[in-house]
Length: 151
Image (cartoon, rainbow, N blue to C red):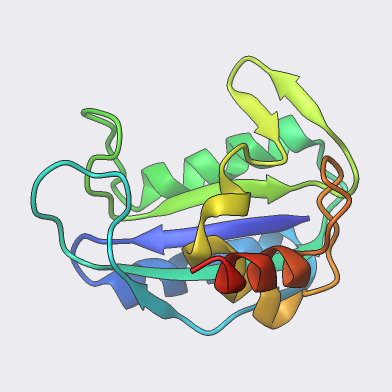
């Protein structure tokens, strides 16, 4: 299971550290990438750079329960959603959940845009390059390499 972490408001490092501590209570064998500073993607108007990371681990929770827990962590850290792509204290996205493909209201796994997002693929490839996208059959490392070659 893979989670993308991001923050672009306030003490970004403290927000990610908070999330990592909370994830440690939810996930066994937690592994976290280094933090990457990235430019905002898909936002309107000026916005500060993001600090991004990825985490992988094991859980006995269902995908829905894990997503609920991720949203609760965001809320604890003051996340608001005034409009799409608004600046955020903390953003936690469920990217992969084993080899499951889920398409339910409010829960789509694999994350529909992760294959085009360097700020997700790069940290995820650092810690889990062999994780496989169940839709394309490609590994995270291959997805990143393909992205790099197309630039």
